[in-house]
Length: 198
Image 1: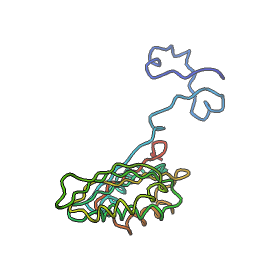
Image 2 (image 1 turned 180 degrees about the horizontal axis):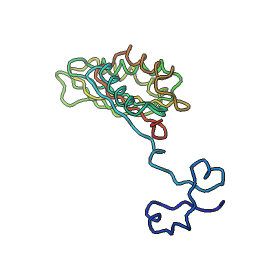
Image 3 (image 1 turned 30 degrees about the horizontal axis):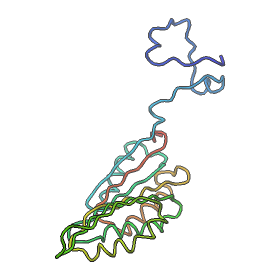
Image 4 (image 1 turned 180 degrees about the vertical axis):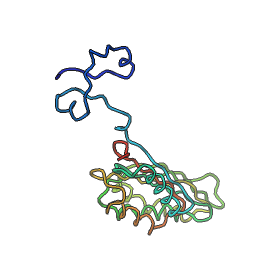
């Protein structure tokens, strides 16, 4: 009947059987009975990290394959500046921004640069939209190129306008762009909408 509220898990054992009305989710929706959110409606994150982009994606594939895939609501890729390579991997990940125009992108950078013959270090912690990042990217990474040692990370948080199917065209474009730019050792996080167990 309309207006009845579902019992929570603790109340069910205490209720009298004759007083219970048991409905399928479909029938509950038809009758207007309120539904209680379940854990499966919560977003689920899957992470894959590796010394190469290929290893990170294989770990993502293994994890998502075990779950049966699911609609992807968000993606994060983090690249790390390796010792002796300067900002190469950070720059490579930055190239991905303009190549993924269908995704809303937020960039977060944490970079520390040391210079031979100078005490101290140059450090920057920045976060903003892709457009804002592009205004400082060349100058910041140019300073890093001149350093004797560079450390830090660059993260891209990518959000599609609506959840995309794992394995669909947008997923393949994302994978292809990151793989082709090859930002070295990365950590990839995939956020599945609504639990992703479908």
